[in-house]
Image 1 (cartoon, rainbow, N blue to C red):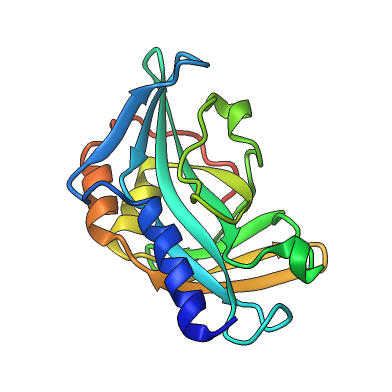
Image 2 (image 1 turned 90 degrees about the horizontal axis):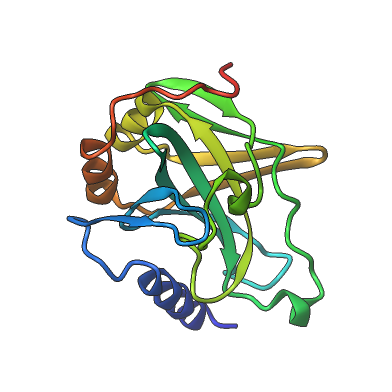
Length: 199
């Protein structure tokens, strides 16, 4: 696949998941779980070179902030949605394993987080969010504090490290949505949630 065609497909997938302007924050009552879900209007996107698939090809992570409100009990998450513009079945190359933890820089410090789940339903989201129109590979959800999301919005990490058993992949910033994240944290509730891991 040519570099121009690949970039065009990536742009179409990205735009497909970002139809609203950054001034909006999506908030709705999930009809399957009765939990109020607040989602950043457009995710930041990180990319990892994948030369084993083809020249100039990348895998992507859409990274978004999500707040869940269950009858006044608020929990905050950073969602990482993995996707690609390459048909894995055609290449015969399976996607990378889902990470056991991630490492990112927040507030000037290197931080590690373990996933709360790899399935949004288990935390109360019945209707998928932040998924691209094409190329979905999997997802990981990390419970974070209000302060963590504010730090992310103030200084988005330049990269995200995916770590695990025989897994170490670096995804570099590819498309930023600073205004969307800043708008999201402005509208967040004040309670601070429990952080799973802080190193």
